[in-house]
Length: 208
Image (cartoon, rainbow, N blue to C red; front, side, top):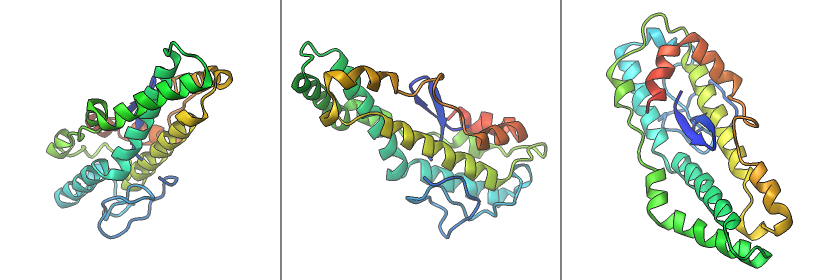
């Protein structure tokens, strides 16, 4: 699975993935505000794609992973988390002190090296270099569902991290406990399906 680490949980995009996993496609296949889409028929099995369809899916996935919708979601989660963690280390644990430390770290993350590193383009060359074997029974639609479901997890995780302006001494501890982890975040069932039906393909894109 394409993985974007969120706390201790690796979110398969991942992606980065909006909208619950459907199997519909739209012209262009570049992804949109509603999630990843592809022009490759959703019923096609990944292990039986033609060379042309495999390259098309790969290119569309690459475009999606490098879209502002995808990378922007990663940045927002990363920088909100950075701000929250900075607030916990603030010597001034008043409401104004927490919010000030949080906002400073959040802004630095958005504008500095941290934001740039967070959005380094995924390398899809490994996936594009070789096709899954015929043993890979997962369909394009199931892969699309996995990507979109995991992006919903990312969005939900982002929403669980409070904005700096809402931090107070009484909410700081609960905000930290709400950060995604292995204990409170579950991999979408749709991704379990793809991993079961096509572990080799998930391994290919999981290394990206």
